[in-house]
Image 1 (cartoon, rainbow, N blue to C red):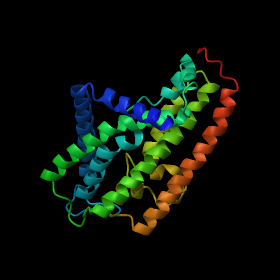
Image 2 (cartoon, rainbow, N blue to C red; image 1 turned 120 degrees about the horizontal axis):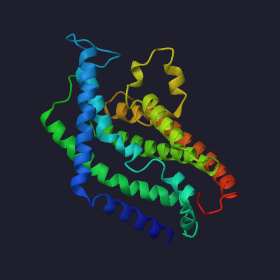
Image 3 (cartoon, rainbow, N blue to C red; image 1 turned 90 degrees about the horizontal axis):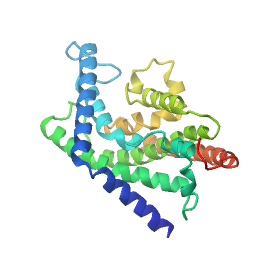
Length: 269
């Protein structure tokens, strides 16, 4: 019964998002093109001299990095409202989930996964078009093994992002507004996760601190894996660390959830 319920939730969310196909594709294309133009303009100005590189990235290599971020970043962060859990606490609709024969967070993760399926279709379609016309940079090859490893990293990154955002939103049990906290978390996760700037371009003194945080495994680690910058041994170790962070955040979420539910009234604010 629980598995069927989760599958139904997954299916409904996927079909609901695809019901407005024109709007879905238009928004994605406009956003993707804007991101690409901004990244290309910035790095073409930085790497203006022929043959110039930064931390092993040529201009073509760093453009490929941003293309992969644009294509695959939504598979990590998801297209849904980042404050949906908090909003359900505020308006009292959280109560309906408590009656379902399944864990609340399992239901929310099934909703999230359903929303990501159309994004996966978009990533495959747009990626196929891009790589059909734009060859890979010299010295970079993407093999089936790298793609498989990268997809595994993306799956763990998705779970890690979900765990992180769920924990942050549970502050809504005690705070009247968590929007600024959620926005700050999104900003930090993208900045320190390699979505906006490759982590290898940060100063040497900062990198060890970045490696000690979970954000690297959200964007930078999966993209570097696909680009062949991560060896299989390092990839396996990174996956273990990513999963460990997800479990730790999940445990913290469970503790905070129990404390919050002890004072939840279900009437909204």
